[in-house]
Length: 330
Ligand code: UDP
Image 1 (cartoon, rainbow, N blue to C red):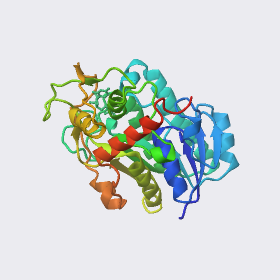
Image 2 (cartoon, rainbow, N blue to C red; image 1 turned 135 degrees about the vertical axis):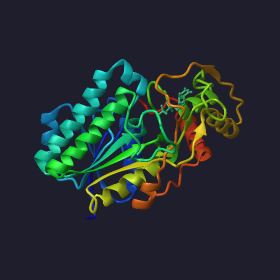
Image 3 (cartoon, rainbow, N blue to C red; image 1 turned 90 degrees about the vertical axis):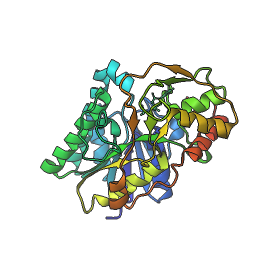
């Protein structure tokens, strides 16, 4: 079925806003629902905006009753491992209860297709690399557990109520679209690429690399960076796939891993700034290496990352912070 009208929950956030741009460029009519707790108005790329919180079930039900959407894309979530350890209640509330409300509202209003942002944090410490989809799921953080709980909910809602779902397990989302005014702006920023770039551009005065005693080629963690527009592309392809297979899950990564110091080197080379990071202790809950086996998505979705080269990602992030040093206007 050709889709034309979609609802994007969390469409003002980092990955969601890039998805909206991608969907709009692909001719879709995009409505965003966002509570703006983390997202920004100026990151909105949609024809219609609903400010609403999934925790407010009555309002969500009313909004879902107003239009029939061909598919719902669910990006809204709390997504910081460390924060989830300190405040798991917020994660169970904002991730699990919100997703439950969304599914209940879908069920009540006859919406039957959802594409859900999951994470490689559902696997926990890798027993075998690269990680493939049937690797054991033993998440080590409340964040990973909430995402896995929602994956299970989606499975059960499919079996019992026929709601189709794609669960897309992102590795490290990175990159942006500075030419379209979109960037990465988390407050506080905890992610490696923006932190290194901000340090190189003197927008922050400290850069700490967490741990240099991991069993990797240079002692720092290895991650698999996937461009947000490649993620967006996979979302539309996954949505189309639901017409033939009603319950799917895919890893989304490149299959190539970079150490934290290789990321620093890339920023050094491209910015021309000699960055000297400090080394700090390991960050709790950080596996040494997370790299995707994304061959299933490549095969079944006919998806291939085209924008995830690390140096290109770094160039874009430098461009974004050079034009918007303070990020989005708050
Ligand atoms: N990291 C770091 N310094 C920072 C931010 C991140 O050393 O200021 C490390 C982090 O410990 C991990 C890697 O960079 O090894 C990627 O972390 P990020 O938070 O970007 O993504 P995550 O892998 O947690 O999703």
